[in-house]
Image (tube, rainbow, N blue to C red; front, side):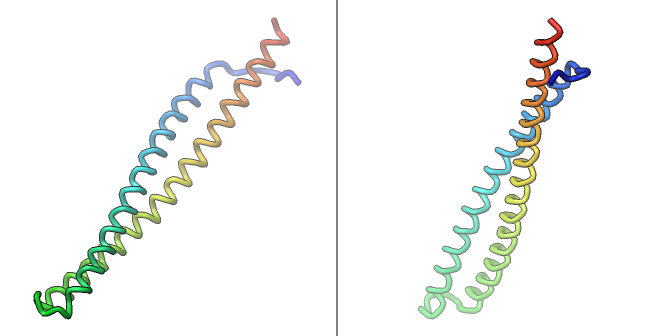
Length: 117
């Protein structure tokens, strides 16, 4: 079915937004990987500190205080992981929607000009 009217130039705006959100999506994915790596590092550090507590080589009070700090860091980084996942879902939705809009625009462009020429 031929569209009744067609607005030219909207594809430029859609493409610009699509490129921007693809870039933001990639940045979010890199951030997520970084936060996950940081959480894993903090967990390994905590395990190491826990193994050193009863050996008598280090001050146990300071080791326990460090473990408390590590737990805070793990919680903070875990929250960042959650936010990064939400950000990825948000940008993925926008990219999918813009991709669909661009495909619809191109189909309507073909349909409109195929009939009128």
